[in-house]
Image 1 (cartoon, rainbow, N blue to C red):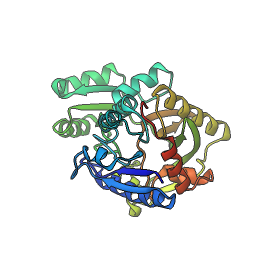
Image 2: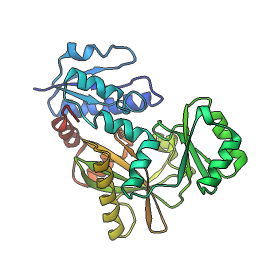
Image 3: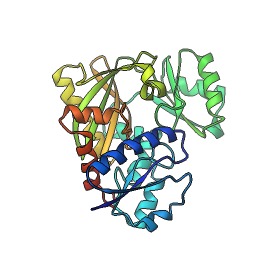
Image 4: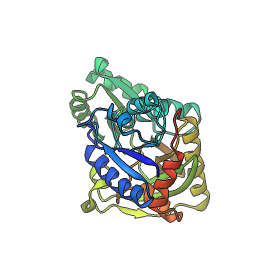
Length: 307
């Protein structure tokens, strides 16, 4: 019987979602016959990892310190096999500026963007970068290294952009500004380097934000499989596999796209996708006849070090 240590909770702004993911995965792990322990970095030292002497670490953390390579570096140090992507891949995927550069270098379409650091932020500089980057309104501004659409703002004019970015730069050191791409919201699950399906989302809100992702009351419509032509469906699966490869991801990832004027724009890659009852990866897997219990079992078997 394998001993699995579930790391959940943490201190990021996605703590509550991490706890929900952990709860769902613990139930599935127990159904698979594993002996399960849990650890919350908010209340317990990571030194407890070695004391539990696990065979595998199942990482259920989301957000900063959970999917940005930091916690993964501890797992590598302790030499305990763990789930999801490794140190460098996690850091790059979480950092939108780094990942976008890699997408562009590998000819994966992503919205036009520019980056601003707290040290060079000013309204004057913002105007210059909009002109130089040839961006058009609406413009999306968001933290460079947050997940779950936290801090994302869609601005229809310069006045709104100035106001929202001035607020965000007081909280975050780095911001990304990019063209808002309308069209269909398409998300793809990749398992072990192979895409297993694409789902379409139709949120009632302006976009698939935090509430649309995690609140039942938001009533986002899920269409599985995504309602796009078969040829384009195959194409977005291949783009996702390519993104997985160029970022050198492992385990399970989710790629988030906008489909507009017959083109796919990759917004970001999530190396620690949610595993709750409202999460997309389990829903996509289910459509491919992979139950949640089987999916979790595969993730345990896929765990390793040097990821």
